[in-house]
Length: 86
Image (cartoon, rainbow, N blue to C red; front, top):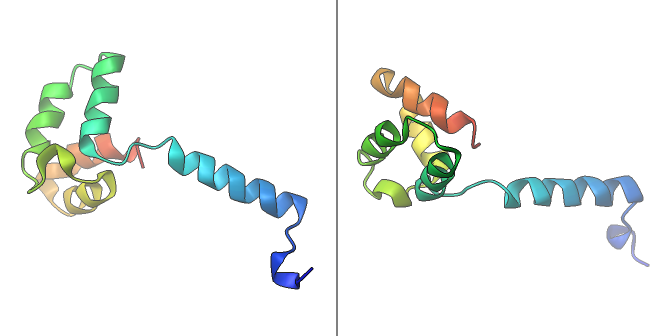
């Protein structure tokens, strides 16, 4: 077997854990809003209002929205809300 195809047990486990971690994370703001509504969070209206500031609204990615929100002083609270889902 070629050396590049050899995977040790711990390396395989670390790879699978990394994949599982990214699969369970929401990708879009609409997914985050659905999770927040399902949990019964009281700040869903604030979240939806802030999501409207983005060109794609609730179809924006969590990473992109967090990047933008973290750089604007007025959006720090929204950025904090998104950090839970990164």
